[in-house]
Length: 323
Image (cartoon, rainbow, N blue to C red; front, side):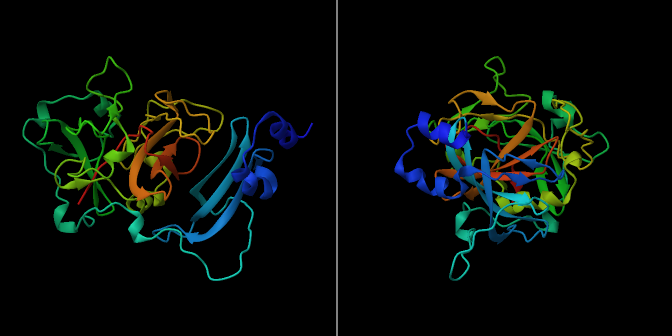
């Protein structure tokens, strides 16, 4: 029988889901970058009249309505314009979805004068499990977090100084929860810590002095690079669609995944259960999703970079960028 009718018979669909049911009932799918129709029975995508927030011409915003085994759901993210999706027209002036007020208060981006790579005393004799994923042909600096003495490799890319690994700082504010992937790894030495979303807006900031949680606009500057140049060579699960990472930029994203949170939207997440480990790298941005949390950056080894909103209760790593 029809999947839509089956779902509606088996699930108690509340009235607030009427919008999703009216918009093709979460059907129609996409025409993806490989030239294939996907998700015909489970998702509908509608373009939004917004370019990428840094005006990268190959990306634009889309809202998707899902209708699958987990129920009805929706989210907003940016997609490559080579995707095929639906357009619904509305009368009146265009609405700007993203504004400067949607980002947490952070210092301005780095200037050229701030981008000298230095190596903190003691770093040369330090070791980290994560450092095996770095590119030996890229020049890295090294900073020492004065709060706890931990070292982090840094690099300069497109007039920004990034940490080349995920943050591991344990917040003194006990209201900011954070977790390691393994209870045996008290140092979160490979994936870094997974932070509750309230770490993004923490005051003082969660990042080391002189650094901050990047906005979505700052992360979007990475879109110009090939995905394979941003991810580590090793650590990724392979599938029939995957490509090999070469980490040419030195950013060394590794597949840390995400710590789940049952946000009540019926998307199938379980609180405390890690998903997408070995398949996708996530990082919080400081940009609000206008609902329950913040947008996150995501990259994997088989598709484009993406951004989507997540409730603050999710545990997601943080990559810091210099002020």
